Amino acid sequence: MAKVTISSVIDAPVEKVWARIRDFNGLPDWHPRMVESHIEDGKDATTIGCVRNFQLASGTRLREKLLDFSDQNYLVSYSILETPQPLT
View (cartoon, rainbow, N blue to C red):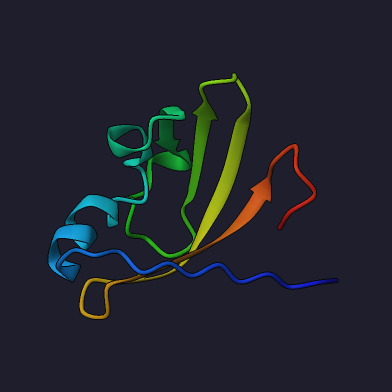
């Protein structure tokens, strides 16, 4: 299977960017295509292994699993569990 890595440089202080994206369940707060999100099983959004279930403006639902999280290293890593696209 092919592996694709996407990287971007954001011209802003890391603390400001991290404050926006650190909430694994907060996509609807800042991404215009995300309209609803919840963490399954009532887990905290920083718990490794938690699953976010979110809906796009198109009505499509996706599920992603948190693999790694660190405030110290400004790190969030996740895998795609369910999507209509052929991605993992």
